[in-house]
Image (cartoon, rainbow, N blue to C red; front, side, top):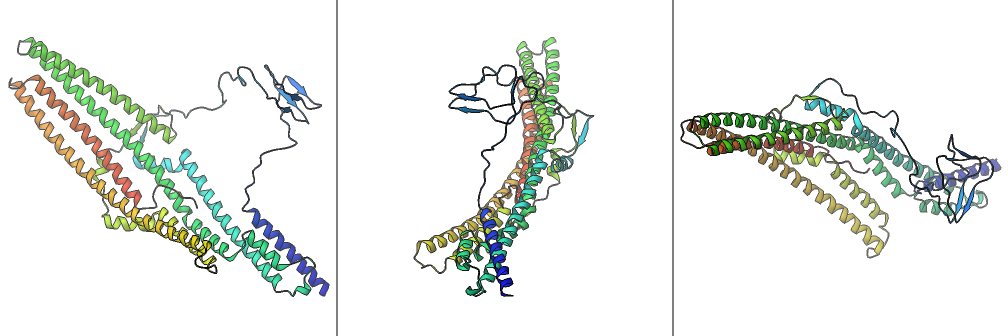
Length: 475
């Protein structure tokens, strides 16, 4: 019976050593730098070597047309290099066979909501977010496995410690094994820290994922609004061109009957030329914005898309959360604040780990300073988040006021053009004055479109800031 018991103890000690070694290896970074016993084979090569390896000393190997195939042994060079003259690899035709751009289909109608849904479920950004989520899950599982390893090792060490030394096999020293395990990271405080990180990773994997989805949505909204703005600018430029062309027609008619001079005609022609240039520029910007949008959604860059939302509809239906409520929402949800609070808990554990040290020792003081810095970081993060939210709220109010001001300016400019048109027909104002009022209307329309775009973007930024945010954090 005693022999059986000693064998059981010996088996337990071997398991402890194995578990301790397994835990220690979790903190070791292994990098495969060299692969031995592997040769490189080129199929269909011109030169084949099936016997010994080719050894080159102080020389170079030059290949023309064909490749070099080795079977069994590898190719080694001493002091020399492998040199290729001119092009090392020549590829003619298509570099990658079978790679084709997305197919252009019939015209698509797309709302902003539909575009966001597509971006969150398909495409490279969505795939990247999914991979990051799986990585976060793996990190959380890693922390959990480490906690389990520490617990199992501690349980086995406690078991060995409870056995009288006279009954232990020769060479088994529980004290030495406990020391080696602690050096490898097996300690109660390490287990507490791993438990904190495990719970944090589990609780914030979805938050991290949502933050990345928020960034995808923000990018989609930004490019969608850029298309809408470019679209509005083109329509405004075309309206201005039509106005200038009609003005030129009227000026030419009056000049033909002797009411206006050649100078008036030239001024009007110049205004038409400027309007035509603006249309071309606006058209180029719209094409670029649409191609960028198509690329982002994984469409053919030339895909025809009808954008069903407008900047006016986006901003007119907006509800603005009060600043105080928004601050509280952000403090409850922002993931970076959760990370700062985790750091405080970790440093509290580390300080408790050195409480037996003298209070004036370097070890204790450093642990105390680290905790104080973590607490300050968390406190600063709270203040910075509040500043960020209140600043975004003020920006929303500013952009909203800018939209209202732009509307009033457009109304004023439009009325000024109407009155100038009437006085010009009566010969009470010049063509130059009329053209100036028309330019004012054109600029006022552009200003309103831009104000609507900036207001819409400010609203979404304010909304995202109240949730987990748009930036993922390492778990």
